[in-house]
Length: 584
Image (cartoon, rainbow, N blue to C red; front, side, top):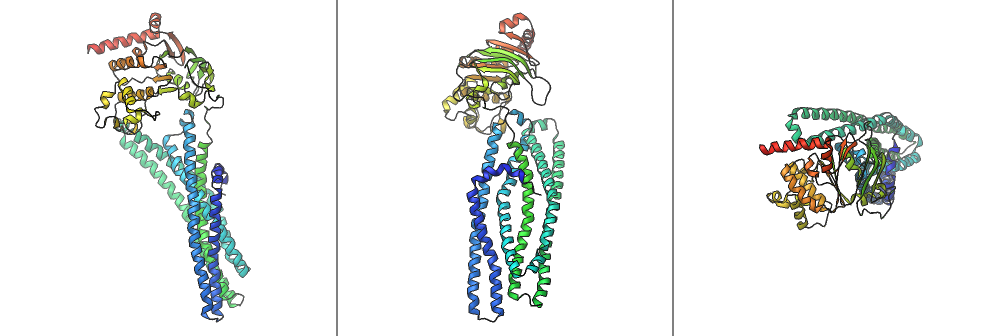
């Protein structure tokens, strides 16, 4: 049986198009009536000719047949245009809905699905569902009307012959019931395999330098060939099932014709059926052949669409762990005071605690430096401020208000964040810097570029600020990408600036110059800076040292050196390393 429950999430989209779909159904009704009218008119013509009536009485019948054909042509065109057009609009709305929903989901969702898998669902699965809303509906309705009108006419002519002729339809039902679930299961597996291929291709295309550096091209090619071969074999299995279904339907259609010729011929010889009625009956029988074949194709569409619908519904049913349910409309960040009160965090499906009992107060306009070993919880702490992840316990306050009292838009529009691995779009340098600030002028773009000391390097490109940087900024060095990302952040003129080890790819001298320029520009901002280079946060009002998610030291630069703890050891080590570099 076809799992129609899988399409429940489409009901709101179908309701929006119900008027158009109903108009399409009406046009299909007229098309079906005109189709059935043709064999009836043919039968009438044969009866007139058989009775020996003058040819001029057949001409009106021929003209009526011509009219029926023309009506069928026109209504068939508009029915197709209406229903298929409606399915395309549903496809667009579904794709827009999915994209909007995915954009609103937080990191906990994106860690479960690969980008390639999302792209496969976003494209091939949406297309499979569209086929349900268009061709499947159109041919299902057409089959229903043709079946009703043809069988009604056939029963009026000879009910016994009709029963004999409809016997193959029972065989079709058995075939559908037997093969249908197999098609559904195999189609589901095929879509999953396509997702695996998309994931592998996306990862390879996005990490070409890594693959070449480790000389694993042959291994990756072999893996892709294996995935492609498995997908090829899976498609062959599906094709065999579909071929079996199509062949069975064609066989049963031909069997119906054989039965008609044999039983109908006997009834003509016995005088229970005349030639005109036989011609009408034959025409209706021929009309039923295509719907029987189309029925198999439609059922395959439904099973494939149901498999895809389940994959889409899994995304649409996902709920963000961060939302505006507790937000107060109109609440805005003003002073940007930040307070963490006994905040703890654990990533989903893990036992290790990423942050434990974190507390600190950061007044508006002050700077907090955050240092610690790798995996000590620095980035996790930063992600809690724009609510990229929810804290498991404790509270975060901004301007004395719980962070949940701000809408995500109000909160995040007041924050500019530069992650460890800055992402650049495949666009111009100017577009990347002004991303999120639509009305930014070129003068403002150049100003922030100079502030992070990237302006001179940009002007060396052939197209300067109009230079396209390629996918993920592939034409730029790591330091250039980091500085462009910083320029993008400060151009937004946020109230809170978050920098997550953003100068790791530049030398210490360039870092010192950039930080000196940023110091004046960000003096009125609340800033949180994560860094491995302690020289970047010597000016910070407070510095916290993290270890395994806990704060083990805190204070300003001078007080931490006096404590001679972890911070002091890091400072001494980096000072010695810097002196050695100068000697070289």
